[in-house]
Image 1 (cartoon, helix red, strand yellow):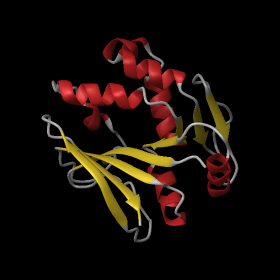
Image 2: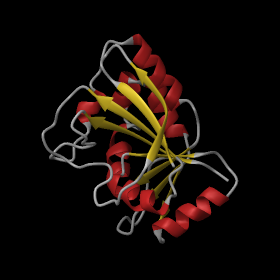
Image 3: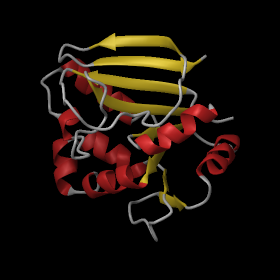
Image 4: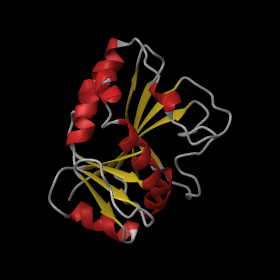
Length: 186
């Protein structure tokens, strides 16, 4: 069975988007060779990327561009190469390379995807998807990067979700102030 891991950035006050649904604050270029190496390794790790519509549209508008390839060539190459699935009931088609559209029931489709052979699944951004899958225990692991910034308002990754108990499986601090926290459901 394939594993579904959430990978998200959050602010110190717990938001994964700011009040304008923007996530650029999480991707400020920091001069930290260790962080850069982690990002490169993480992006090259493979898997199948999973998105909700909003995150898909944001990612698809950036990673295929020449600016993305210039700014972060290794990550851009991986993001464009990896297989991707986007969950949306409103999109009619997807144009980003190696992407397929799923319009059916989210939980049923995720259960099916996890049961199929193939690489593990990585859910990025997509707070509404996380909030729906977490209480159904369909997420196997959480990797959360806490960024040294306070946003004051925004959206949480678990908006509307019920209590979820987690067990820490790891952590790693970087010189740029970011901290990776890893958890799995208990």
